[in-house]
Length: 371
Ligand SMILES: NC(=O)c1ccc[n+]([C@@H]2O[C@H](COP(=O)([O-])OP(=O)(O)OC[C@H]3O[C@@H](n4cnc5c(N)ncnc54)[C@H](O)[C@@H]3O)[C@@H](O)[C@H]2O)c1
Image (cartoon, rainbow, N blue to C red):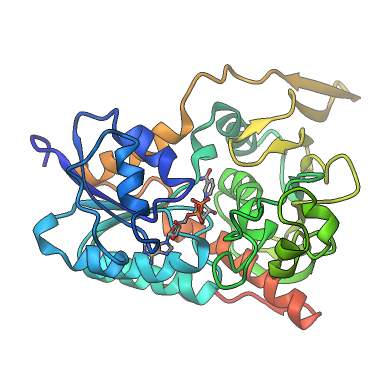
């Protein structure tokens, strides 16, 4: 495997596919051989932007591309909207192709379990596109939590998001329609703040959840003034705000809220509270892992209450490059997926659990069977 180029395909050539391509085209050991999009001509135009006119892309969808055995694919980047994550990933795995799947893993927990089952049966890997994992600030958060300096951790408050920032316009509504996005701010950016704390804690299992979701901004035509107005608001079928109280194993409580739109400056910092210290992580820019200021640990020293400020490390890495590179290296070495489904299924179980509990308007149990 080491002496030949990896043969890669792109499924879904919309917005995020560009960030994958920008990395692949820099890599000497990668050959982009195919691409597909549901919109006729979109994949062709996409590859032309990179000066690639020899990429096979006359497929009507992911299945037609994956059925083409002449491609001899090693991997695909699945960059479709959320509702298409499961069908495309499972199909690729059944064809023996490794998958770099964009976040969130999917919409419903059951879909995530199907992905894991197909992954196990295929012997291939699925890595989920959480680039903040590779950010030095996120790694510092993990280092602090894993060091034990906070003592027994029992309470976590996380989330965040935007005062205004619903990703929709007259030209693009794939994030806000149920048939495409399926889940709103909760899945789109909530998944990042969950990954920040759960990854740092070693991904404890979620047990129960009480969830709330609302869409006061998304369904209001005023929100989309100048970018589609009432036509866009009419299509808004997901959440623009979510809050939840989640019980995790080891007697941990997770207090969560996330917004695409809210009437406050920010839904807040992340707090990780333990018996020996409390960590404050200033409100983060969810998608890239950047933290809004130095981390602070509140603790006692010589019997005095004190605060230690930890400066943020230099941010000199390209997280998206590392997300793609680590996936390819795992394929080449026969290693494990860098962001594995075995962890992200708990992230997904919380997101799907919040969505379901909000619909039912009561607490629910989260059950994640072993795959
Ligand atoms: N990691 C990140 O920083 C990041 C950033 C933005 C979006 N995302 C994720 O990436 C995904 C896509 O977002 P986007 O902004 O690119 O959306 P988009 O709507 O711009 O693009 C999705 C494309 O997938 C195509 N598609 C859907 N189903 C298909 C199928 N079965 N076969 C072939 N093509 C298909 C659509 O036609 C569309 O062109 C979402 O899940 C989103 O959460 C990740």
